[in-house]
Length: 343
Ligand SMILES: [Zn+2]
Image 1 (cartoon, rainbow, N blue to C red):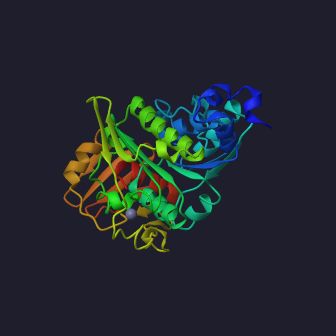
Image 2 (cartoon, rainbow, N blue to C red):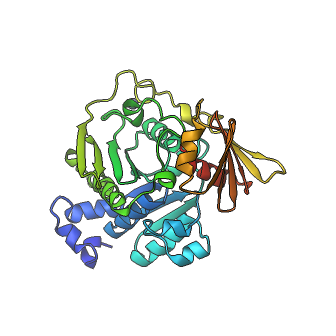
Image 3 (cartoon, protein in one colour):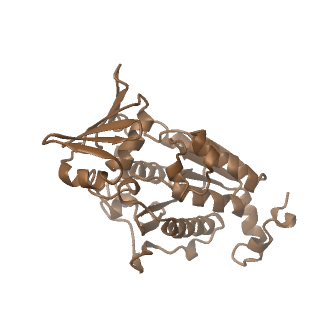
């Protein structure tokens, strides 16, 4: 089928840099979206409507009512049914564009599956909510020379950068270490408004379209930052890769090594999972309790913090270790940890 002849993509084909040739390239491309929350929803919808032939959507969570304010892939019935986000997204995309192939993956992305999840893809788009997964994506993409598009949003602030291994700096060139656990606000403690999601996702998708249609010269080549409440837009030039970067120069892929993700373990017979930080940390529990009190019931003593949210109870220690009661599912526990402690 010639996609240009169907009329569906006629306005996009009229856009000169894409044209019929670019549309053909899109229909032969595979994009992988890692994380289908707010950013992932916006990315998935745009790429599906644009006619990217294969979309692999990876997510470990299920739909909740608190998602509906900004996660446009999901409906009330998805939340009522607690559908996995990857499945709910696939169901909705089928209604938007039945001519493309959706590959939903319900998975907690980790060192053991990331390389399989990125197999035979042309571009990787970041829809995650934590740095541990982003370093994993960065390692895998640098190792396999895959372009990936970092993006994040919290509150009214967002940031994005397009990473082309060996050509641009990688994530670790720009951020050599992840921010310490609990040092940065997350959407579950500081909230997020939808417009910043749309801006970050729009820039990410534009970059993906440029890459997939062979217009590398049009990439923005910067770290782009936006704050739609403070009315700040910033573009920082990123230049070349850092000469001694452990990832892209030395080709050391620490987060792909087995054992590096053994920081979550089921506590047998206790309906609980222990999650440890990806690197040593020391938390200020008082500060953390102030942030968490917006999202649930918090109790604090000198040694630990107890936080109740929904049917789960998180006990968080000063070393950033957490025991999460109410589940024996590692993916659920890691998701809660990422949401409320961060990373
Ligand atoms: Zn690097």
